[in-house]
Figure 1: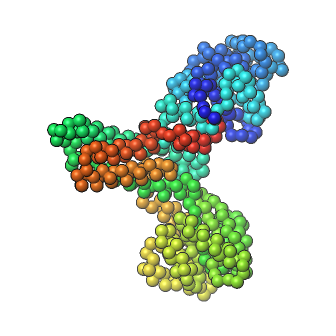
Figure 2 (figure 1 turned 135 degrees about the vertical axis):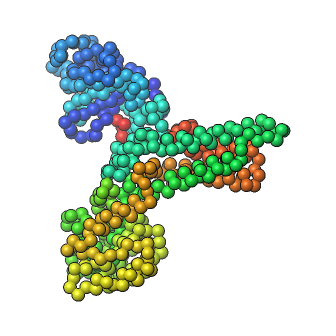
Figure 3 (figure 1 turned 90 degrees about the vertical axis):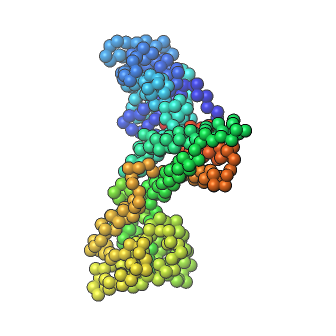
Length: 474
């Protein structure tokens, strides 16, 4: 449906289900009068901003009456829906930059539904998904990247994703891009000014300064793009495939990492036929561990399917843990798949008597300097903590968590497009491209950068997609 942003909207802002408390949010120009029509207590239309008032939500058509007593009592018990606290927030210092009311009631879904129905009866309508946040954006309270960060903050499942979302919601990426846009706008206007004096062959924009600016902006954009892999991994969990031959200790390792008996452990080769996935958070980063079937040649049809699934998971993983006892033939078989992975090549079961603890580790390190090579014993808890620590460090490698980190694929695509447009400007300057075409590529760059924060007109379908992912009360 097409939203009318002049309407007054309402929705439950707390999660569905039974809880101790529920919060119903009302926003729009008629918020105070509508809630006042169903609230027996203080006259909310006269209440000061950022104040909280005790009273009752009533369901009858009885004309609203106020009371100056500390504990107002409704005339008829049957009129009462619930005993509530009502918070009043006057525009523009509210989340939506509109008049806003929050009703704190008991957490019964029935009570919340009854309150919403009576609010609608008096003139409000149910909010669409994300409409409160969309109004905050449209009213200039936040920009588009901050609006998207609200959704990320709500869904944050670990410390790292929480920190990144909070930084973006506070305007981290907006601040980074604002300076770039302002400098580009300045040069674009100078080049377009030259077009008005094309007959006089003058240059208002110093080409050397423009080239220096382009290099500076390219460097910043490339740095932002480079953080996406880490940001996306943190946001969605880092996929870690555990591979090896049958009975290499893969399921035992998964159980130890999870600290529970999640996977069946047996001396019988081929016990794991399918993949098993579980998530754990280590030092604020969520890892999705995938225990795979032992990789080997087999005539068992079901086991063969498991082996193929194991290879598929390797292709999808960011990190691969390879457990071995005698040889590393599997690494050689999967060499192409592992080229862009973080690989832990771990000598398994080093507690076993007579086990070769020094299976030519130095040679392995020389052949694969980018791999992590060390021994491991889950049974004796040898190097298990080392594995956890190095997993975290390997994912964080090269990323300063105090800087702006890109987690949104829409932002990444916009930055890639901006980078391409900048490269067109750079090439155009080298080949003597006319000023009007240089200005076109500069405006193209500005358009892509501006689409991240919403500083340009953003397609309604894009806004619908972004805010449609929010819950109703947000």
